[in-house]
Image (cartoon, rainbow, N blue to C red; front, side, top):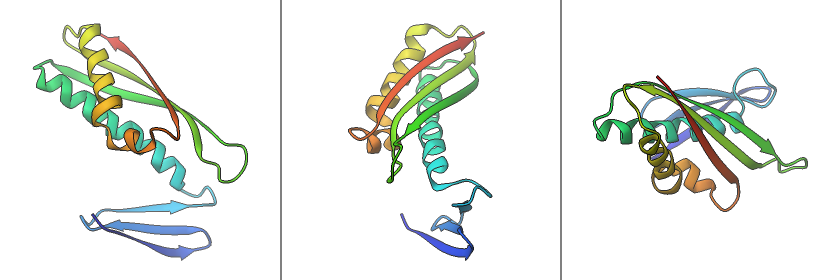
Length: 131
């Protein structure tokens, strides 16, 4: 995997991956900040796992949202110190044990982004099921 980050102006950068996708990042609050993209990556990576695990169990999923709440260090470098991910999953006849297992497997075994942060960031999870 490769990527290139190019300065555009002020503190705005354009990032492009070798897959051809691009994203604008900014240090002035004009668009997503690099830390916001890390937080979004945690939620997206883990949500992909949760949905995939539930689908592999042949369960019908209608929606999955991951609400993230993060805390950062007060002084530079302002790294994440805590991240809580709350998943709201809806589908047909979903059982608590199935969603709990999917969330746990993602956080403990499959989510590359969460696992990359493990040991440096306290990551917790919770979930709710909506019929």
